[in-house]
Length: 75
Ligand SMILES: [Zn+2]
Image: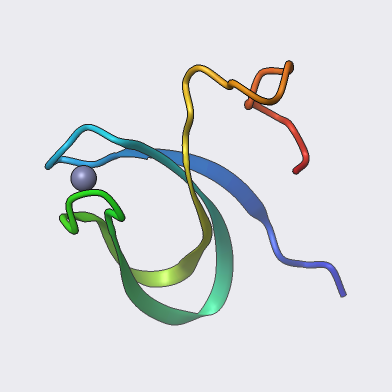
């Protein structure tokens, strides 16, 4: 149980510069996938290997609604 290791990584869209974060999960089996920018549809990141990325979120560098910094916040 609970052997999965989750880490949050940050990516920048090469097309428009939008920042995203994703949760990386280590797996014992190979996965592959890719994530495309919701703004410009450019490929932000693609992966293949014993890990998977999920929970993609656009990073708002200036939170308008939330008074706390986005980093480390449990949504
Ligand atoms: Zn983009």
